[in-house]
Length: 433
Image (cartoon, rainbow, N blue to C red; front, top):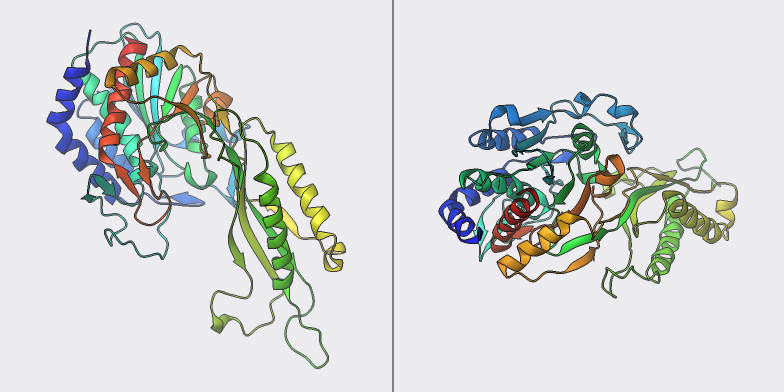
């Protein structure tokens, strides 16, 4: 049976409502600010929409700590930069469209939290949470990463339900908390609570590329302390941690150049390489009025990546061995070596089993829609690894086209967003039908 005409008609009839929902969701400031987050208002908005077409008995609203034993689970990461994670009033939402036999099952997964908005000026629309449209793009923090992808999963359920398509298998849509800033505990909680889901589409932005591989990585902190009393005095040598920080920064640049020489797996383009980004250098305050004291300490925050299959132990050892070989050339580090530590979990890369039966349903959906299909590696780190590592749910990353995730003027392409809903609906019908 050709379901495409019915899906197209349904989307056309409901397009205004869907776009309004996405706009309103973007306007809700569900910012992740470790050790906590403000996802609850967004989750409540989503719940109030979903309960109009999914029975309340099939909507599960739960907090991370409602999952028994989760804090003892090996995948639970309890801190962010040393501060204990807080999950009170940060609920996950999982909605289920029940099938007749409960055989195959698929989930559409997304996260509600978004990155903070920093001091940069937004230019297309001055409000970073506008949810406004211009030239076929909707703008706002989280539009691309990833409220559009998250909402698409719930709209796919609504489409299947209202078209009266009866499936044998269960179809789930979920919105989890705390994915940004290396969180992932919300995803782990959902996996442990629903361990028997066969397959998932994770809607991180991919430009509708079928992301069969993702990279990994983590954030690091390098700290220096030069010692001494601090302050000025006659014939007193002045402390200067900035010189040491500069030497560390130079060593990081060398390591970045080394990483660029590592050949990418075949699913990636030849241009893809793993990267190192130094995103904060600090010592002595943030403005001139704070600079009067003689500061003794400083730090750098940086991120660097690894391809899927790189063990965390090797990732750490290679880096620390390199830094030791570079920095011990300097006398000031021989008796006072910098402290290197990770501040978030190690996000592992993920590889999808491309022989999984759900993959054939995805390929068929693209073909039915006349969309270009490509299976590629994606240069993003996300929570995909937690699906198969926590339970036995395989996952692929398929999300809409957009731009400037985590940055100014973040946007999502509206046509791509609607195509994602179509892909989800057709995949669910074929795989669970």
